[in-house]
Amino acid sequence: MSVRAFEAQAASVPSFSDLQSQFMPVRDVNAQQERSLSRLERLAVVITDRVGSMGFFLLIAAWTAIWLAWNTLAPPALRFDPAPAFAVWLFVSNLLQLHLMPLIMVGQNLEERHDQLRAQADFEISLKAEAEIQAVLQHLTNQNALMFEILRRLEQSADRASR
Image (cartoon, rainbow, N blue to C red; front, side, top):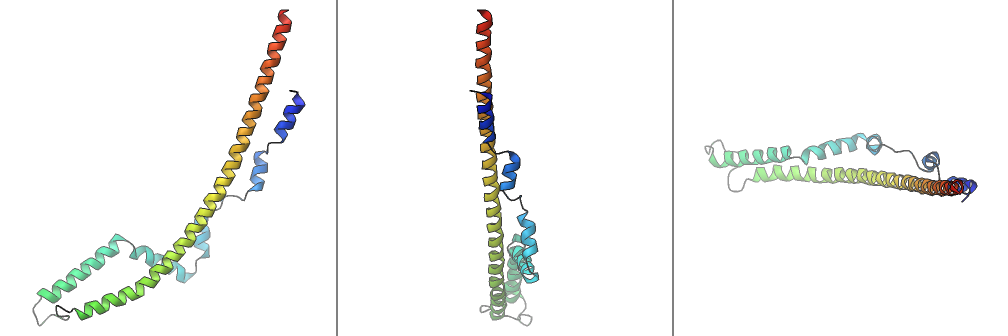
């Protein structure tokens, strides 16, 4: 194989600068998501993060236990929501649920949008990495072929010199 053939083969492999120009630069989807949120959406995300925590669960569990214990065990004159109906507790709990459920759904929709941005960015990075790996492998293949050609020529030169 001639040097020109090796040069032609090497020229067909894209350089890293060619690869970089084919792909968009890596983007910070977290910052992009932050910039795209309105104030109300930010509030929904903050509330969703807090409501979806063990701390909030423990707060609601403690509030419920204290409420039910007080209205069951306190002196009858101090009970404000008598057992077994606990009508006020049910009313307050239902109000809390009615307000939090749509807000949690809004927060989940925003998180889904963020997840989709991250998935797209991951896909773009994977495509770029695959193209770079292919270029590296092609360069290595070309180098191997060139080294074998050099070795073959060295062996031929050594054979001629030994004659």
